[in-house]
Image (cartoon, rainbow, N blue to C red; front, side):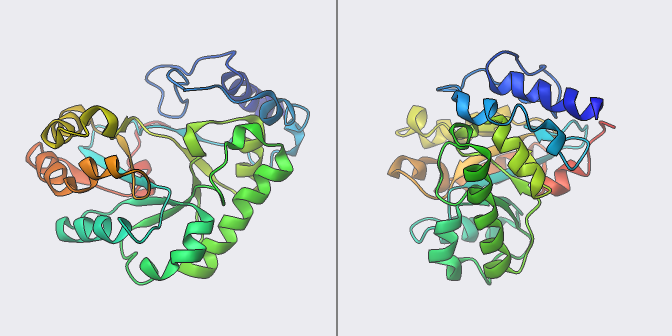
Length: 262
């Protein structure tokens, strides 16, 4: 129990803004750059529930430590009728697998878009309604995740093992809710910068192709504002550029299997 407490305590401190993730560790997120910290309810409400952990730890990963030239593309917030089919078309054309972190209510409404097109792709949990989970107590965070978990199973026939908290905000209640479902948590090491490059698609492509390193996890979105299109319309160019650099592509779970970290 001491080990369990120390693992979660470190995560709680980080989530509370009292600690900073270690640079270079693939299982400890860097919290720098949040647009706002998680509020007290999320982590404080979980602080006296450490004994409730069912596993030795909840892994939080924002990249994978590996020497293999492999990268994972991830897409958040879908599915949606405007862009999810476009993303699936681009992935299929390039024979690239990806991980989709789906919002439960969107999957409930638009499950037909993806049900027969998942193929090599992986599905993760991105909550039911996309709230800031770090501001919720354990019961509400658990409902957000469990409702989506059940919807993913029912609509896709798959059981998710990964979750990504909306906005990348992580509180103790989120950790405990993820633990209760057997999830590991996935953040990201690179992301599309649609605001910065909204009038410069070539710049967006170059930024991703140049930034990727072995084990990178890339964040994109298949639902959202029109500026997302500066990335989504040019996924094929990113794939081609990374292939020229010698990279291969994997789901997050496939990438994690290549980790050189014990």
